[in-house]
Image (cartoon, rainbow, N blue to C red; front, side, top):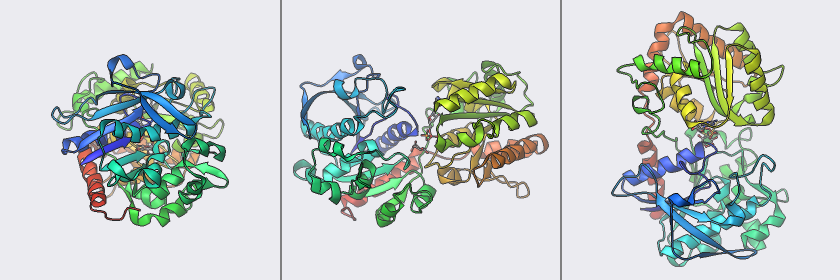
Length: 494
Ligand code: ADP
Ligand code: GLC
């Protein structure tokens, strides 16, 4: 089938979180299954044009405020099968994307013109297909930034070359919906009847994701458990009603992990490879991690790692909140070492640096580092993810693959991928808790540390069980293909 992924992020070009990993890895897995896959993303300022090939001619994109002219660049996605490369297209437009930041900058965390930028981008997706006279069977959009793609398809574009095209919208995170003042609706170029008909209206504001959820032929999110959770009010971010309404077309497909990139047996960021058959390299990774963060290289003290966006979703308040967060008491009371890498809300960045200077067994690094994130997964004994909600979560799957036992909240995709430790039955791959509060995190970390010192053979056995799990993208890609094929046969679709 011909599939076009429209996304605001894709590794290795633009990434703020797991969305970027998921889009590229799914595309590669689909190409390996023999499908013709293309990706389109904006050409942000940080993407080096000199490494791309520019296509001939400018491309005009109609917007509510007149036609905008853009350039288009292209390249093959690294890791593509040689005979069936995934072609990536970049929409280049200085006014909208020639600036630092994907969605915002430190001084303007959510760019004021985001609805205009992403309306332009979503419209450009259709122009791109026309430019090549290449029409996909499936337009696959991701999260709010490309949620307008299914809306445009349903309200106007489904004709000519697109007459048989069907749309899929994947929710990677319901917490971000693209809600803006409805004055911005003008930039979509759609009529006001569509504002109401497509479901943009949201308490007198404009909600891009909501319109996408009403308009796409099929919807899914990134784990089966999150698909269920989001249909109830507590997890639905006010869109649970829409998701219940669309429940016949809404499912959960677990993300995979790219085991070409996240594989301790061939990870260039580690001092030595290791695998289930020979775990000796893990001790070297632990030592390298301890040295990197300035911790005493003690093999017997468990290291708890974290790599995270420092935002409310990730439970950072309960962990690092000044005076009430549990990280302080964990490090004070337990014989552990803790390392964290991340960026995010400034109160949290400040607080972890503060803890770093006050505690000898807690070390933090503020910033984004691919290399360090691999070293943390490999060098840690436990990996902490106390998420408030988690649509899928990639880090806990990476940590399972690297033999670092996840300590997670029992929610979303974490519940689908981690099995709680059961001492009597001798089963489990990690440690879980239900309620999110500082005491629960403290107790569960305490339980894991207790097991480390008192049930060591079980810990070692759990590591191996975790490392043998199969989170391949191939399985997930096949489930997407089922959805695509169903749509091609006209199963549902609105
Ligand atoms: P989310 O997408 O909600 O942030 P995921 O667990 O799905 O959560 O994905 C997070 C991804 O981003 C992982 O690949 C993780 O390694 C990466 N990541 C997050 N913060 C950093 C950082 N500071 N440095 C390197 N990688 C990071
Ligand atoms: C989002 C979610 C995360 C998920 C990722 C990729 O960023 O927060 O849980 O793994 O998207 O789908």
